[in-house]
Image 1 (cartoon, rainbow, N blue to C red):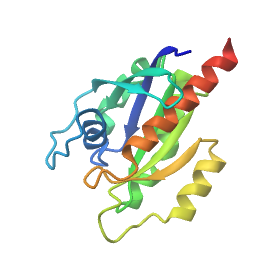
Image 2 (cartoon, one colour):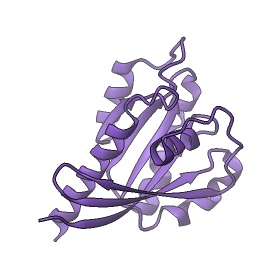
Image 3 (cartoon, rainbow, N blue to C red):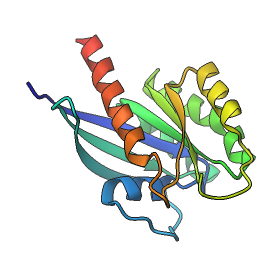
Length: 175
């Protein structure tokens, strides 16, 4: 028996961490090196067939990371089923902003499942180590922390598939 699900997912994080590149890689399979700054939010859709036979439509809301757009984000969070909070592995300051993103999302969407995403794994000189990020994810009651690279297409699809499966699990618990 197959089911059809539609879930709204937020993709948030500081400006320049690779949110748009991550979504572009997942939705189109392409990596675009040079992205323009996101203004407000952008919207993408990806249909996913899971190994369980279930079908999921992910509505991905790409939030602008710059401080001047944060006042808009509360409204965009409403009705979200899950979220990805991204940070740049080569810039510790973006990791330090995670609590602010958690606050915005949880204040406006509730205790939705959240995956922390360490982007730009392909680059050298990581300033955020795996152990620190995983401990933070656990302490902040996130589902997991994932290290990924949009450029190399590393862990991109598995991360979204994992979120889809978690969202189905939580939705079925609500029934």
